[in-house]
Amino acid sequence: MDLSVQIGALTLKNPLIAASGCFGYGVEYADAFDISTLGGVATKGLFLSEREGHPPPRIVETPAGMLNAIGLQGIGVHRFVDEKLPELRARNATVIVNVCGTSLDEYVEVSRVVSDAEGIAAIELNISCPNIKEGGIQFGCSLTGTFEVVSAVRKVTTLPLIPKLTPNVTDVASFARAAEDAGADAVSLVNTFLAMVIDVETRRPKLSNIVGGLSGPAIRPIAVRMVYECRQMVKIPVIGMGGIADARDALEFVIAGATAVQVGTANFVDPFIWPKLLAGITEYMQRHHVGRIGDLVGTVDTRAREQEWISS
Image 1 (cartoon, rainbow, N blue to C red):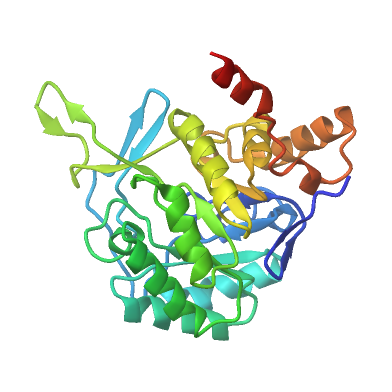
Image 2 (cartoon, rainbow, N blue to C red):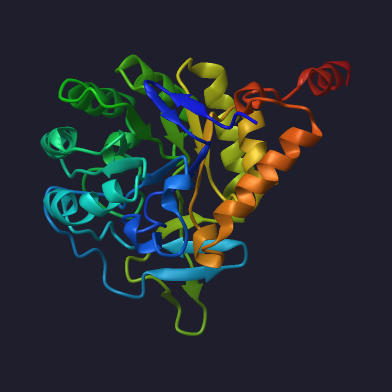
């Protein structure tokens, strides 16, 4: 079975990537299992400086997922390079750094620092976090802003560049096209959906930030649809995510058009999910006589359904 996938100039040994924000910096899980067996590890978001994030409460469980407003707490890019990256290199992890910024200049500078460091495989450009007020989603909700930030970062790095798109827009596929036109090697989607939970007894929001990002199985069908739409719009690879909890979920994204997938919230439920995902994908490929995972990408057959719609 050939599970390898191509993202720009980067070859991943399999399509499974640990999603940013749900896997620490990667080293936190390194003693639980061999992180080098993953296709990639997307780090927590990195700004130039350390960031405290929002005060608690900042996580709320929902019936089919969770709401978070962590606020991109992090140690900053310089501490990451000095303290975390050496261990990730030693563990032979494929490191995808999630780059954040409150301004265009910060995105560029963080990307420059990352590009000069040894052992980083790609940049995931976070222009979609819904629970900070400055930067980020301000770029990701504007076609012009998306184009400008991707273009600016493209000029300072030769690493594969993967903008992470927000679902909190009317037409996510047009943002994928803007990213492609600006020089992105791939796009990843979706980030969390802006949402809110209220304590009816106190009549107060359950999150200190009032609103946060919804993730987990509840968003998966919407995320699959958005991946499918982006696959129709762009030629660059699409990395899909949103509510993946087992191998069938991951395969749904692949068949919809995702070259690779990211798994996030499920890590909190089962930190040992990764071997199960790989085993499930392999078993499916054997059962369906598929030799290469790449041969499944974008193979959803909508023709019969489309004909039914026309006939009705």
